[in-house]
Image (cartoon, rainbow, N blue to C red; front, side, top):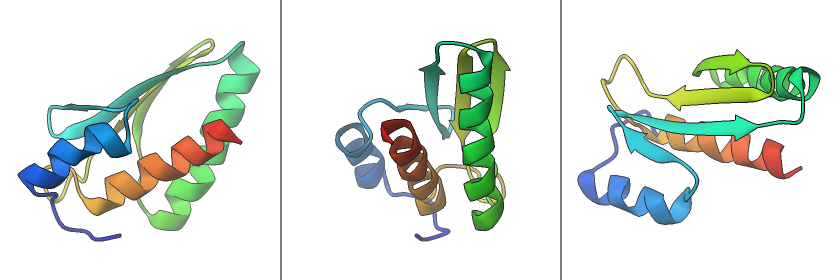
Length: 96
């Protein structure tokens, strides 16, 4: 996982690699729907543990069972390999 901005070609390939994520405003975005607040909060807690380990934290919001996630590498001003790695970890958590 590289802390370098993705190239235009790599950004285009994200639609194949991460089909449920949108590239928007120099970030990766996705909305997750859970059955209730406890499930949504449990998901956020699991993501938080990985975020802390990677020292890469999402921008997110939660309303009841909905969690909106935005990943960007602020100090680089866009999407890096770190954001892709975090998105992949999140996908693994949702699929588990």
